[in-house]
Amino acid sequence: MRQYLKYLRHIKKFGMQKSDRTGTGTLSVLGYQMRFDLDKGFPLLTTKKIYTKSVIHELLWFLRGDSNLRYLAENDVHIWDEWPYRAYLVANGKNVPPTNSVEWKEGLAEFIARIKTDDAFAKEYGELGPIYGYQWRSWPTPDGRQIDQIGEVIDAIRKNPDSRRLIVSAWNVADIGEMAKAGLPPCHCLFQFFVANGKLSCQLYQRSCDSFLGVPFNIASYALLTVMIAHVTELQPGEFVWVGGDCHIYLNHLEQVDEQLSRKPKKLPRLVINRKVDSLDDFRFEDFEIVGYDPHPAIKAPIAV
Image (cartoon, one colour):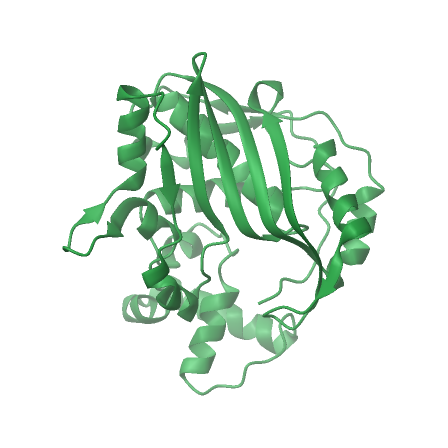
């Protein structure tokens, strides 16, 4: 993952200071590409720990077509908690305390506990709108049908692997407003598969790139998706290509970035799928094993909500 560290240095050197939706401020550049050969190891950052449990469960959640927070809460994955919690406070005229304050953390914990146990509450306040999983598996059409983009792409990979239309999009312009109410409009918004020499590759376009917290997670997630789809289509994993649009470092992450840049990368781990799976929908959390992952310790940083 040396190229990821090079990417951080590029933003630090060439980034322009900009304002943003969260009011935090960023150093930002437009446009960057990184390429990862999946035959050389699984691209999981080693200069800080990435919680693979969250990567795997979030991807399985997307692939279920789910858009409710309950599945993640039940599996102790909390990467989406802040946005629906803030939306809940605003919808009920409650005070929105500073993020990461004691009041925020205590209130958030109570909110998630209720999401897990109260069906009506989860239905009303745990629903994030028509975000990734919904668009991937149930894209709505004007005539009332729903398109399973993932299913159609897998079918096309099997039947017409040279197609240049092996594309999945989460950027449904008509649904952006609904996505923003309790979640976020898609940051990683379009990806395309490519088959050659018996290998499956994937290129992702990510419009908005939180380079310290989000991008390492996104790289791992889409590398995992590429391996999963290669597995069910009986291909070998090829490359994962990451393309960023607005590539930024939040100003309150600069100290953490410097700490990460001071660390020496370690050997990449391997991803092992423990059983033969014929359908993407049949994957379970227990099917995946990350072998040889020995990262430097985690580096905490505040999330911009």
